[in-house]
Image (cartoon, rainbow, N blue to C red; front, side):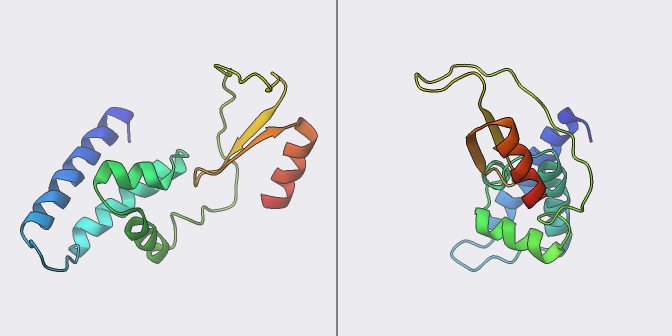
Length: 130
């Protein structure tokens, strides 16, 4: 999926979710299986690109725990298969007063961040977690 088409898919899914919720005001909502399947597929693509779950759920208009539960039930999105992942090394923007230019930050696909690492500590952490 291209970035433009991902945005279009997101907007379409958001409209369908809103329509479903409006059709059942005040009652418990059960997402139709075909819609839920498309939501999980979309979320899986976003997660594989390293996007945090809370951003995906917010963009879709869903509660984060609901989307996490659907992904877990799907079994393929939260636990990414072992293998290589693409990474990006970005030039830092504004640095705080106490921060040096030689610290590293690890951001997991779930959106957790560990900051202030040196290269040796980062390598150790990746060996342990990876």
